[in-house]
Image 1 (cartoon, rainbow, N blue to C red):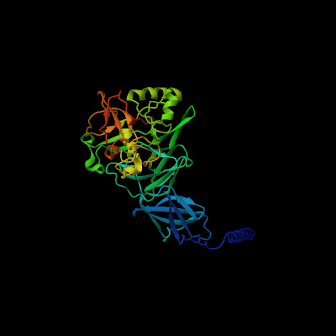
Image 2 (tube, one colour; image 1 turned 30 degrees about the vertical axis):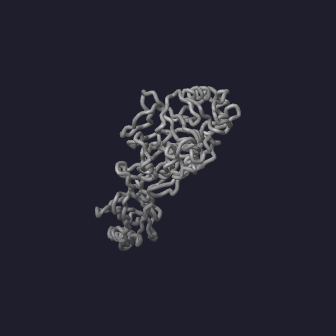
Image 3 (tube, rainbow, N blue to C red; image 1 turned 60 degrees about the vertical axis):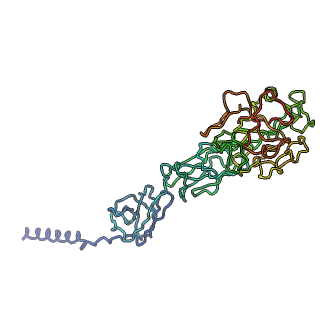
Length: 448
């Protein structure tokens, strides 16, 4: 009996212990649901994905499928949004899972899709100048002026249509761009200096050019006598017998040909007797007057005058080349295609035999041309730097005339002859460098 009691007691204790360890049946973990609403927005070159909150979720997993591929995990977030920094071209689909601890929902049935079709510049896309479709690395613009640029095909010059191209100026204080988005832009010159204009596509591809804002004119003073040089922006033009000259063109104006010039300065008006006297100490002119153009000066006399002027100013003045003279007379990059320098009506811009009273007149009394230059037509002929020679049909860059020959070129017409000599392409009055006349003077040029 003694041993039984012990066994019974142990059994009872064991049963009691067994009862205390029993917590009842397992309670299943409650599944977490997926977000019921998922959205996505293109944000520049990225995609912002956002979704509705799931109660009790402590984080979320974001999955992406591209063009029907399997969904793959691209990131996690403890917030209700996620930025996809590397979306792929094409249709990007997004789904989201909710997570709480180790519990993860299934993929959301809600899907957000964005179609990423980036505007990227074609390989041959370049920045061109709107006015003449020129492709240059450095565009020049006068302070206060505007320059049109667009993105076009380097071969055909046709415009592309990149509506989302972004334009910037590296120095907005020098030049500003407007609009900031689109295929074309207007650059407004504000202050002297240089800035880089950049067009950027949606993938970060760039095209850029340099824009230099230059002085519209420069004033110089010699012993109290001032004169103005006007800036001429370089470019390409057709030199010689162009269509507006009609049947008036002489044989030596043919063939018309393309000429490309670098930028330079040219005199606002002809050299006056006052400036000549200040530099040379004498006045050879027949018609006397300080603000009348100097005349009766030979080509050789002009070289002596320019040498002394350069010594006084420490500059490099010279006579314009024949091409520079004609480009400026035509109005440079602002040309409107006039027959004379600034008008198709000669009386508006020139003193000729018909209206001069057979004498020279004070400079700057007639209307200026497109560049603000006076008396390019009429008053007195103007010596050019070049020797006289026949034209070639081939294109030229910064031509300086023949390397040999006895005659020099004069341009512009005068008070003593009729209107045909005042045409911007006329070059019939070639002269020996020693000759002087009361209808021949000069105009200065200055390299940039």
